[in-house]
Amino acid sequence: MQDCGPPVAREGDPPPPYRWYSTEEAKNREQFGCPRCLDASTEIATPSGGRSVDSLRAGDVVWSASASGERVAVPVLRVTRVAVPETHRLVALRLADGRTVRVSAGHPLARGGVVGDLAVGSAFDGSFVTDRTLLAPEVPFTFDLLPAGETGLYWANGVLLGSTLH
Image 1 (tube, helix red, strand yellow):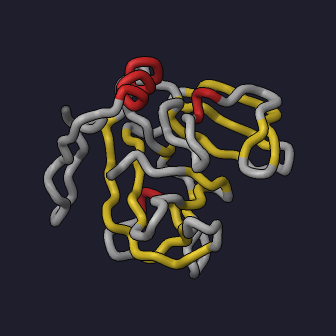
Image 2 (cartoon, one colour):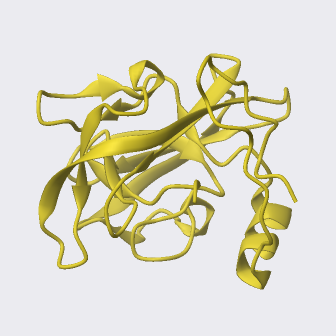
């Protein structure tokens, strides 16, 4: 089965990944659909400051989390760009500490589960959700990245998330 896509290839990108899905992944995909990615304006934390996800390329360095939770600088292994169907909606989350992120409902959380599981009042990344709104994407693509390292986690608009890529 092909991962959410088809991705729009950039010069030098590897071919789209194909793999078997676990029962949980298949359930999330059925419930929350595709794509499962970030809004193009999302800033990814890097050692030199935030960069929009749509500007990142393989080899760029981003902050990730080690298995022990330490912030580590690692290269990006892959970035994907996925066309957004007209019916797709992003979940806009606002946290009590002021952080916000717009991401697909099926996007994985750092500690398991997916963004679509969060409701107002849910504990999330050291804070809690104060607003959860569905929005139409403002651009025709969503993005995701796969950082090197042991966890595949990265900070998007200051929020620790998992990658949809393997």
